Amino acid sequence: MHAAALLHLLQLASPSLPIGAYSYSQGLEAALERGMVHDEASARRWIVDTLHQVVARFEAPILWRLLQAFAARDAAAVDAWTERFIAARDTAEFRAETIQMGYSLGKLAAELVPGHDALPLLLRQAEVPLPTALACLAVALDVPHEASLLGMLFSWAENQVLVCVKSVPLGQVSGQRLLLSLRPELETAAVRAQQLSDDELCNWSPGLSLLSMQHEVQYSRLYRS
Image (cartoon, rainbow, N blue to C red; front, side, top):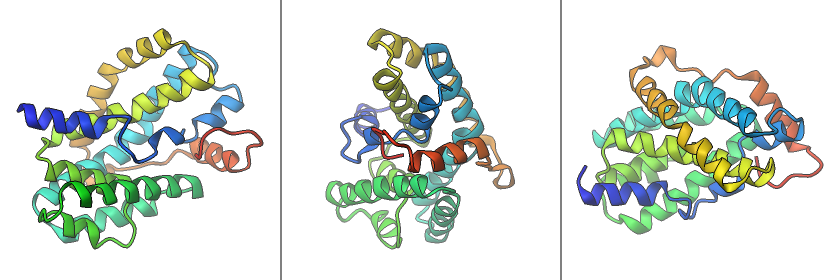
């Protein structure tokens, strides 16, 4: 990867990206409340299971398709995969999360790459989920598709680990050990995301959906999802 593309990828994957990712736990806080995640081992099980059963089977493959659609300037494909992703958010919190972060990243994209010919495909969307905004900006910044996919997976995993560091709580060393141990899992997830056919995409995870709905009324909470 050229230095410019690597630096752009690091910027997109940085926790300092102003889209509010740190304020969401994606159902993990509800699992913490119920004692399902309580130490480093259970945190790793939760993250690995969610990665392979949900993210690698739906969110990552859709990002992969959106990257290709933006690269080809295929407005119909961008519209279709954006609509499908939003429709698949099965709780109010999951839907609000992706729309809020997508809106923030879309606004940032308009500031960072004004006039880029991929931007109109993003701006035509009535609602912008995070994968659509991320794909647009990655293509506009010439980040290779494979690197963009790995960057998205790493950012997701890092955020989950940080939730555990702050809320289990785990120590900083424990958190970094956990994040480092996820490398082969993230590589496997990226490969799988590129190989799944359209008919194989699935985010069926009723347990996670129930936890998300329970989180909506959780008495004490730090995170927005």
